[in-house]
Image (tube, rainbow, N blue to C red; front, side, top):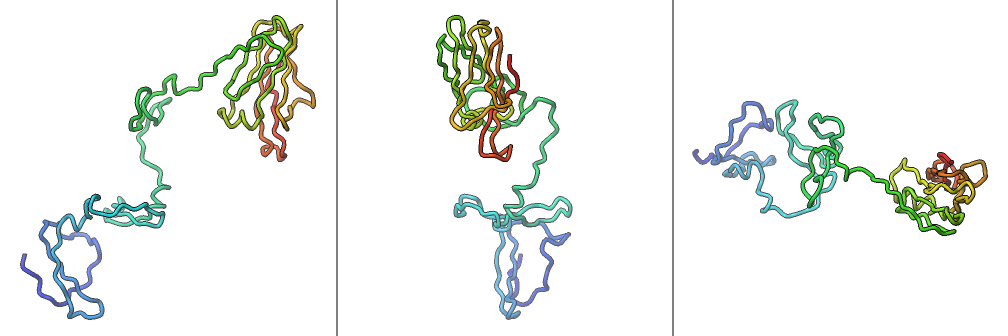
Length: 238
């Protein structure tokens, strides 16, 4: 292509339809908007037209107002978009069958996430911890179901605070205490509240007093009831 002669050029609409494809050795004329007779020639390469390689650019942390180039699928024309707006666009994921999740590998070392079927390891596996026969037992925040041995003695179970157990376990899960050997009819199991907590059970303490009985409690934060007191909601007893 011949070197352009300095002068004036007409205003062009950016990315107008029918624009010539780049061949890699195009030259453009740049004119001053304040002095139409002042111009300079510039050789335009494909790399310069599309953007420099990432390694040649400074590394920065993008802000929500930074702009990125996109292709508008409605018009087929290049456009720009704010980074903050792109984060709110729903991805076009393909349709997937039931019980398929977007997650890391089912086992082994960390890997790029993708769609896969659920495996047992993905699910919460409540385990029953059987406490040694004793008059005093602590229910841990890591416990979900606790078996109490009442063959020789009644038991008091010291509950974790509502807030601590709520923070350590999935929403909607119940804390469960069970008379594992079937002697609570004569040797009761009594839960003891953590500091500042209450039972939502008519102002009384729910006691397991039936053989093989169980007590299921659901944590309720005070904010859900418009109070500052956290509570254990009695979901079932005996």
